[in-house]
Image (cartoon, rainbow, N blue to C red; front, side, top):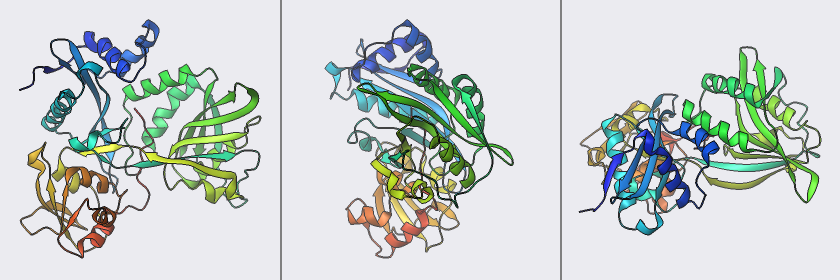
Length: 400
């Protein structure tokens, strides 16, 4: 039996929760000015705390929707600001917080929980699996030119930060979302505004206008190196394009900004086609590939039934979920959908591994080879690769 209480926090307790979380990541408490902005990130009823009776742990969440293969948007929550006071770690506080969250999400009919993990070894025990990845790359602006056959069309509009915050949310909402992308509620745009206003250099946006109206944008800022003030890097904070023409147009603009040596784009899809647009593909360089979103299937039947599948022979998955045992069982996945079944399983896996294959980022056959999926039918891994595969790389592009 634990000797602490988990409960939902009132609005008057949000600042204490923020201070506790910031302490766990070695940041000082927010001052009054910063808290006036940060208070807007808290969705009413979305923060919980652990008490013994002192305040020893916290976690926060907000509501959104996740786009799954096939284009459907299903209910999800973003989980963030998870922390336990240093003198109370490794005593079950984190497990109690995460378990309480999952029970609440399940009761509310949420299909997915979603987070960005500070440490990769923590959240798999609670059913979260690494579901999307990103790459960061830089382009030498002095050398880079787009190929002459790169798409051309549309008009570009340069906006200051205030106008960007008015315009970009609507453009984002109207774009077609690839698997892994999420809706951005107001609390998320408030976070992005605060981050943008911290920069000492101006944050701007360029919007691409296609035949049907705005169909893409890039938010960026230019920073110098203190020791070399004339060496400048343009950092792309956000870039979404609804067409190949919009993507090429935005990059044509970014590579044309004067007095910039390097353009750096963080958290981009693995299949971002920048190299294919460059006349000299070596003027671009991949800096890193990293973890993006970890998802948790809170409602496995709805999640499996909600996405589309590739054309392959049916596969029966036997799923185990110790924290939400109602998810455990066998599911028959076919090109026409997925449903519970009594048929024998071809693959056996836990809910964490199911999250890893759900958006198509990892091949079931690779996970089987790594010992993370038990194979009972030798033909099942190859069929599952096709069933769960996606045409484009799954990616979110939203941080929180």
